[in-house]
Image (cartoon, rainbow, N blue to C red; front, side, top):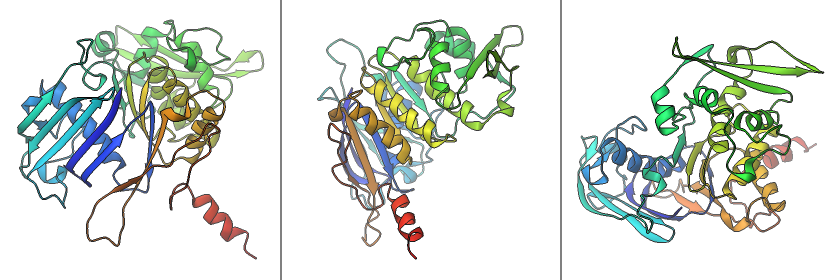
Length: 372
């Protein structure tokens, strides 16, 4: 598990150090640096996988992420000509890398690196198949999806946009869900598809996910059925049901197929979901964090946060394993630098404090509405 990240001279951070736990929720107003923190991890992943080594330079443009050139990655208030990252794994420093700042290149050369392997001889999940990332911009509803058979069979790769979720389900629907904590109590079986259906029922009751791989056409057909008393409807194309089904399906699939030790990064898991579905998504995320998965979640949803808080109160996740990071910036400061406040939870899911702007819009609007 990643337990500490340090950044220097990267985007909104002249220097920032964050200590991570099993579940890490990043929130704050738009443009405050939440995505920049996640991008730091994605760039390290990209540099290792596509450049074959962190020693080969920091790759700012690739298949995972494209943030432009050196001038786009460099903190405007930096006084040194390098960008630096440190990562601790299980409280031991494993990555300590620095890259020379060059404004007009998309690969920053390495100038100082220290990369270790852990005591088991394996690299950390950030650099292996244990890494899972789902962007905010996920797959849109379509009648059919192109099948990337090799990526799913070889690496279990669901896709950064969730584009392989349908194929993954088609090939693994009868595989057991490994993590006890994320199995839904109403699932009719312990297999993947039964648990996807059960969690999808928290979004819309009576939902069944149908995913079929057509080998001769190299496509996947994804559809949904809905219970009607003792029967079910015909198949509905994703085009003809709510966006929330297809947007949330990759998240459910990723979590329910995860193994202990995996690292899952998800942006805006609440997108296109009703508040009840958002809260249940928070509950599922918390349950996964209680069973050996590390999650880094960017969200603007108070319902998702409250789902996590309820999971804490119900002892479905240890309150000490939940970290909340509120990213903010002083607009009156002469420096364009992000600061991070960190409200904590107690064992009843109560917040230690609420920074200004921290999910307080409902209260502000209610104050206006109740005025005579």
